[in-house]
Length: 259
Image 1 (cartoon, helix red, strand yellow):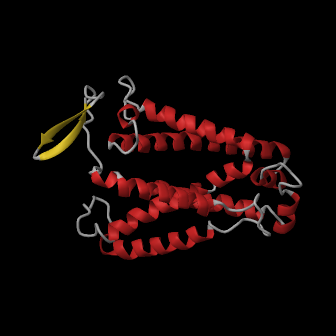
Image 2: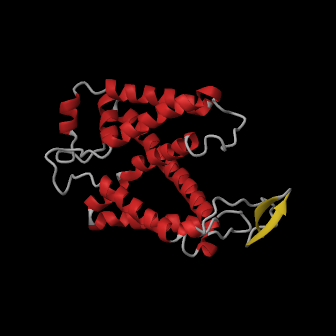
């Protein structure tokens, strides 16, 4: 809670400082557009607001922030991939859910995520439009990952969802409804093109990518996964149990162990 509040305040202050540093936004955007300049908007703002060395320091901080954000993103994605492989969602899940005994890290999914990242970066050499279309769904993907659990929590799982130590009590549903409305409205704007007139180069292909992913996922679920997928499995964190899956019963509940 504290980190979220701190991040919100610091982020708001940072954005306000950037906006106040730009005296004329239309001319600034035109001067630093991709046609007239290759400098990133944030870097251009730093150079406009502070002396050269100050702009250099801020740029270095920005690069470090992006680097650590990438590490964090890879960590999260690899763990999500491991969880899905643990539940048998992917083809070759038995290999992808392998845990390296020494570090107890899912090295297989880490290697998979790293390889996919490399391939996506190489895609820029072939088509910047295709690369932009893929990365354009990043924020929208986060939004969808937020809104779907909230909707299911307040509908089909409203009476069965276990309440944790921290909860909003009677305000949970109203806040959830507001969150869903906000996420849906902001998500709609992400389908709009960034520039007019719309051409094949500046077209926002987010809708096509999202529709394609949804079609593949729906087809996979209807014809295959719904017949065998049983939901998230649990495993024991004992350091001696980290190679293959085995089934046991603890206090009347079936538990999946990594052994």
